Length: 545
Image 1: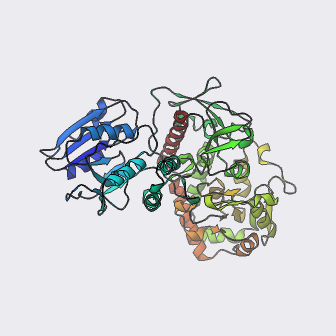
Image 2: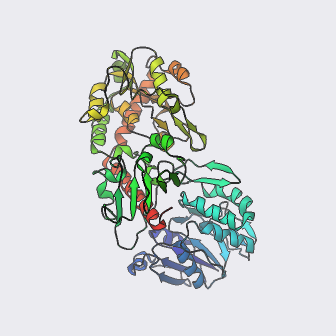
C-alpha cells in the first residue's frame, strides 16, 4: 500500500484530483499544508475519495518549508511505502504496485518521482533543496529500481541548488558520481544562473523557468532601501511596476531588511544585508568580478548578486523585462503592430522598395577593444565594439546615430528618447540594428521590437540558447548574425527583400500584434512581480553573505 504525501502549499486541485484517480483501498492520502491557514485543507480537500482510502490532514505554520512538511508526512505514514508529491507535481500514469524494499523511481529521481519504503530517516529542515541529501541517504540505505515515468515535477532548482550540492559533496564526496549522472535529469528546466561545480568543471544551464508563488515572511512587508547613483535603474524604481509588489515590499531609508544597489560601481560600503540587483548585463560583464555568481566581493564588501544570469526576475515567458518597465513602450508597440499587421506581403515589398536608407545603427559608438569580452560558460559576449565595427563596414547608405558618432548627442538629453527613435525611423530604413550591448541568453531589450515596429528588418545576434527564439517569429523575418565576425556580418547583410522575406515579415508582424495583448501583458507582469518578491524575500531570509 502507498501513502501519498501531498505538500499542498501553493497547490491547486489538480494534484489531489490526480491522487484520487490512482488511489486504491488501503492507500493513505496525507495532506500537509505549511501556510498556517486552517481553511487551506478545507478548500483543497477532495470530497470523493475512493472507499478504503485513509485521509490524514496536517496543518502547520512553518511557512512553506518542505523539509518540515516531508518529515511531518513521514511521521504520519501507516502504509509500507510513501511517495512525496510537492505542490507542482502531476501524476501522469498509474503508479507501479509491484513494491518491495527498494526505491522505485522514474528516469529522474527527484522526490516526486520516487516511491520509498516507510523510513525513520528525516529530511533536513530549513535548507534549500535538502531533498538532494535526503535522496542520497535513501539511496545508500536501499537498492534502487527504475520504472517507467509516472509523474512530472515542475520544480525550480534555482541558483541555491549550487549550495546544496556543494554541502553534500563536502559531507560525502562519494556522492559525486551519483550527482553527475542525476543532475542532468533534475535540471531540464533550471532557473537562469544555475551553475554547478563538480570536480572543477562548470556546467552552465541556460534555460529559464517562471518562478513559483513567493514565500511570505510572516505578514510583515519586506523593508528595502535603494542606494547609489543608478538606483533609478532597478525593478523597484519603476512606478509602473510598483503595484506588483506593493503588498509585500516597502521602500525605506530606515532600518531596511535588504539594501539594494543597481550598479557594481555604486557599492562604496556594504552594511548589513546587501544585494546588487542589476538589470544591465553590460554593467555586469564589465564591472562585476563574476557575473555568474550568486554572491560577489567588491572593494566595499561582499554582497548577494541578482542579474539576468542568477535570478528568475529576468526570465520572461513572453514579454521581456525591460519592455514592461514603462507603459509607453507597450503603447507604441500595440499601436504600430496593429497597423503593421494590416499590411500584406505585397505591401511590404512596395514599402521596402521605396526606402533610401539601407541600414541604421542607433547606438553609442564604442570601438574600445575591452568591449570584446567573452564569458563562454555564461554564453556572454560583449558586442559594443563588434557592433561599432559592423556599422563602419556595412554596405550601402548607412546612418549611425548615438553618443560618440559625429553630429550625434546622447539619448538622455531627450524628453522621451523612445518616442523620438520611433518617430525618426518609422518607415525610414530597410534594416535596423537591434544588436544588444551584450549577448546574454536571457537578455532581450526593446531594440528587437523597435525594429519590427518601425517596419525595418532587425539585425540581431543570438545563440541557439537565446530567449529571442522563444518568440517563435519566422527565421526569415530577421537576420541572426551570431558567430560571425563584424566583417562577415557586413557581407551577410541582405541587399534586397524578396517574396519569401516579405511573407515571413508579414507573419511576424501579425504575431507581434497578438503578443502584446492585455492578457499577455498582465500575465507577464504578474510573473515579474512574483519573481521579484520571491528573490528579495529569499535574500532577506538568508541574511548577509
